[in-house]
Length: 527
Picture 1: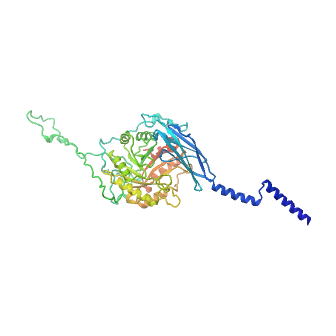
Picture 2: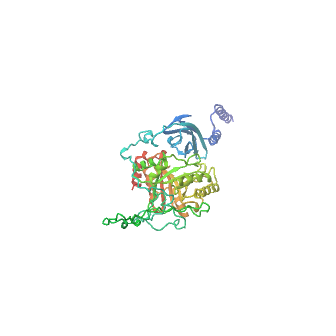
Picture 3: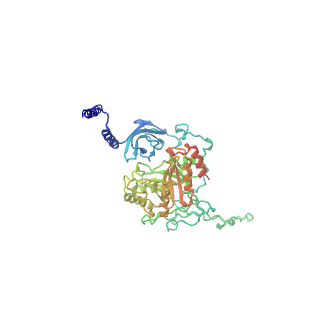
């Protein structure tokens, strides 16, 4: 009896002492673990911008870096500078991104960094900078501004301007469709059978999607028999017959402009090209610099991609040298516009027609299935997006002299909670191509096999009878030639019906930073 009592007293004393010194017992350990887990769930993530400093004076290529405190796992970090399109940062706990400030006007600009984690939490940080770039006669001062020996690759012997095809002296707003050339068997696009979208009765555009407009061909030439024979000498009193003069070449009559009052039944359907057209977006937004890049890579692009200006991408007033450079390049313009009102769409469309680009490709409110643009899932329901898109389409189509093509472009593989990837499709009558944006976010995993994000978009386009376009694609901070090969396999497969593709050569996607991928790009797309 006394022994049992002594044992109980000893055990009780140990428990009391353990409680007094703070040693957790089994019950207290369980409660502490639960409390710690709940505490971690309640802690919100924190993101900080460490460089550049507040109100720092910057120029050229700017490196933005920071840190994140989050225990749930960071999924992505996006950086906005001056209201331009976001740049995806590399890293999680320690992240960094590079931005070309030459795309910004001199003055104060706001940097916004936003992160997301696996639990759905988000955090943001802001910082103001002052951009001060020295004016240069050449819009792109060269890649020497990119820091680090890994990214500087000088090859002056290859930096030459490309030989451009001769152009017609005038650029009419509408041109006849050139006869379609049938490629030899085994070449992409060799099937002369038109696609369903071509036989739907929709009006035909000036030329292949993304292809350079054909030069106007004279319909009459001077007759060789109308020249006076050298053996006949006219009498001094006689005058030459008016019929002996060469017949002047008549000017092709302009085609009728679309009636802005009539509701369009379908968007223009592009003619099937004999091969997929190639285009570029370059960081300086200069067509001349696209020519320099094309010469370096040994390719001939036929599409120049650009973006409207402002935080909402709703204006387009390029520099005076832009239009002559674009005309000299011979490329077709693809312009991405944001949440434009009918008045803003009319103003942009009128500007394009006035400069001879009534056949431009318009990409209205792209990547709408994400939540990072003002027209994304966080701001618009599917029905609101469709109504806004159709209103912009109607305004663009009503511009006199316009024969625009329209691309509805998703971010491949993105479906926000409660939404689907394709729930904002505005309808076949408002779309020429179904496009997608696709970046190398899984660097090192591409081995040429099918990526899960791409086939659903191609299948959806096929179900609507529309061609596919890859409106943005690029590397993402890694030298990944397998990714280049994968995109080439998608483009070269005739079953995918890819009309054109545009490489996004800016930020972490500048291809000349990555020697293996650059060589693979030339091998896959030159010729």
